Figure 1 (spheres, rainbow, N blue to C red):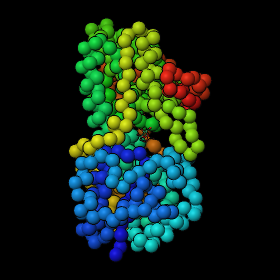
Figure 2: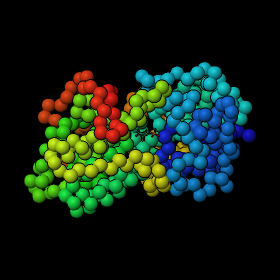
Figure 3: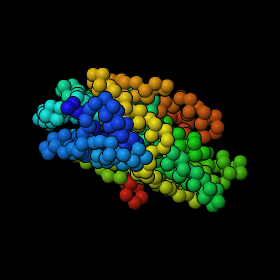
Figure 4: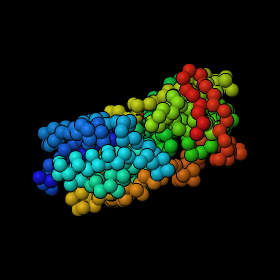
Length: 385
Ligand code: F6P
């Protein structure tokens, strides 16, 4: 019997199980058996580890966070970002995956992942392994699709946090800084900042200064608002161009970002003498049940991916470009990250509401060299880009 293979790769996000369920149900309608490979691409080779997926063992998973197949963003199948950083896979590894697919009679592998994972899927395709990609990332930074599943759930989590921070900030006349995920793109910060009534939003895409941030806080005070909410993406560059990281770049791993919220909060406190606190939302954004939007999107993605395999459309990634769910080439989705356009309608609308992006009067040149590496309070490290 022909089979569909399914795997979840990279950092998890809400909606992975909904994709799996959608793919399994559709496979059954079309007469395929389904196998789920365990721990991302690792389950494809040495040792091959998978389980048969059916109506029974995928029942009730639609609203469950995480992934019943497990996932990893490290190991032999290194997930790197974008085409320029593409890590060529070991040819023996590729050969092993091909053998596994042939032995299990896999008509197509549904690879559910973000940019790093899908650039591996692209290499599979080039090697003749039958794949279809499903775009997953809370960061929403894949090209060729307007939305990835997981993003809406992360934004909803960050918005809920802002709603809660709003009342306590107002009660104590405090500045509260919320650090959200967003490695290369500030979509979560932008959307949550708008939805949660943020006053300052700091993104990787818009250069900012502490003067710009402090000016907004003082302007608010002058107009009678004694509290301010600042939303900062973990990947926002410091005014000197550096990134704040939790650890130095390990061999074969992306550097772990995090800590900019605390850096921003302590600088505000020392410049203005205002009581300033920071909350780092972290992996709360990646856990828990998917939102309604993500359930619908993920279900459609799972169903459409199997349809693609059935039609023989391989090397494609399912995409949502409203109103259509369609397929695009995986290579087009991973060749360039989709970042926030500083002139997009959401940024313009935010500005027209008075939201500050901490812009400096004279923006730093994008190619200017970041200043020296400085170790910030506690563990965060300011690293060069
Ligand atoms: O790519 C999604 C993402 O959530 C990034 O925003 C973040 O930098 C990264 O994953 C963290 O991944 P992990 O903690 O699993 O290494």
